Image 1 (cartoon, rainbow, N blue to C red):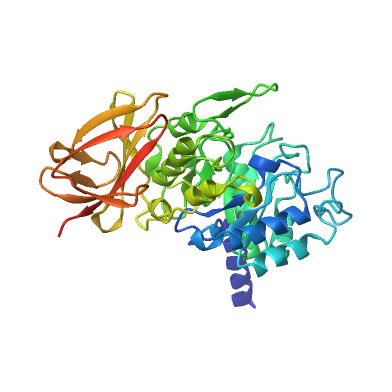
Image 2 (cartoon, one colour):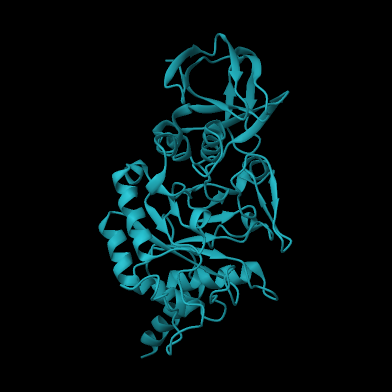
Length: 404
């Protein structure tokens, strides 16, 4: 009897200390999220059409495997008699389980949203006080991903709130990727790695290249460049199973082709999770080609898992570097300005040292072949000088491959 009691005690202590399930996000997660385009205007037919399009367009095969319903999927007027969340029966007349099963039948994974506070950002029931019950609800329905926001959280501490939900998810025994959407206000990169698989570093993104969009209630959304340059010295916290999240993609949501291309390139260079936020049903061939570009996705999904860094600025052009597996490197030239820029870059004079990790790109002693990833062509080697003409807000990105 004493032995049985001891085993029970150990099991209980393991449950109490359980946190995130490991190895669910060894590479940055990829998928589609409903918020950027549809906000709370979501329904069963929309989700099924998006799932169908993720397959037929080739996005699933390119790596976009999570379909995530953001805010607005539940009824606003509380919970059922058991305390469970109620999926909105008008939006989802066939029920949540039917929808999850449909998404899974397409070879995709299903994600939901909630918030750590008493209400979500759009005023739907939050999770505060129901963490373990809601975790069991998600697991029971086969949910694979939870985006957990930070609205309605007055009077509670971020680390403690996300710790509680992390433990609740782990105790279900289901593999659920946990997305910490705390906006970077409480420096989640410093404490979220044991809890979640990704953590937001900023407030919401906005479909502009370089702007701050101020909302009437006093908060701001941010353009691509604002988020890219918002946090310094946090890349050391990002890596396999715990990623700095630069927010969902705005590719296909009104920016120019060059801006979309740069946005997608830099999110990939930063090893950010890649979640499309456009209407997949009506996207152009150009948008699809950007979102499914396998060479750029390969930078994001590189097994080394090292976030890129800004190495140098030449006038209006920033040079970003990302160490890759097999001694490869990616080097991106980003034109921040609204004018065409022309630069000359003498590769063979440069020694680029990673400020946070033990990687060095020694171009004085070593020669690399240059592969222009967007142009899909080889452009000589680092023995020669590169003369680059960058269109406004555009990017040129090379994969550097060691010469044998």
